[in-house]
View 1 (cartoon, rainbow, N blue to C red):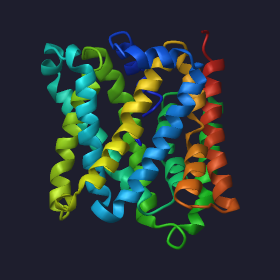
View 2 (view 1 turned 30 degrees about the vertical axis):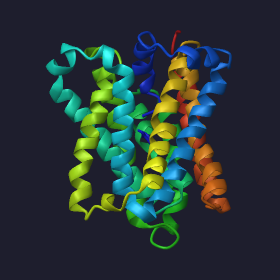
View 3 (view 1 turned 135 degrees about the vertical axis):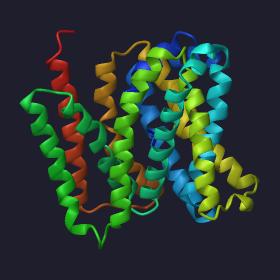
Length: 312
């Protein structure tokens, strides 16, 4: 998510290109005074708060309408930032950008559908299976398979609750969001290597919002019920879930290695549990907390294992 995001770890590649071309003025000067881990932690919290605000919009405009507005507002904000980097490379790779946009739209639709049905912390933990699975699929080290096994144990702990305490459709959508997150990893790397600066992500976000609009209309769209309060809340979701965290991550990555970034991002499921408990009153039982802990430990283990296996 973008997620919610969509892939946080893979965005490191896009971030490193965009920070060199962005001019953040006063924001950059203020952010430069904060240690990089602090910036990233604020980014992680911001994304989960944005998800909590989104959940509160669901009763009024539904998860699909919320997804469309979040993507549309995010697209506008990103295009404004990246407008000077848009060039012929985007036109030459239009098909790739459309595929990237479809991946972003599908991931966000599935994730918002999931958190409409199951607690935020559990949804994020299940979604983490996507990038974890990709990490293991591209690894030849046995210890990485042990880590993914730990994550599977965590998800297995939730299995008895599926159909009772946990909506099976919500669990399925969270798994699909994880698959979308994994696809974002692969597509982000490809787009970042062939499209100039941050224009690839910005234009893909435009495509994502356009892909989402017909889904909203077919589902019986409730966008006609919008008022200024709902629009302001949707804009807040876009800022908290996309604009602010991306900006903070861009600044942090100037002074942080991608591996350190990856380690800190593993705090996301735990952060989602805390935000869900405080903002949405979604307290989790001991078994669910253990499941989230297993996934978090697995994500941390894969990241540290990768760090030790690298000569750099």
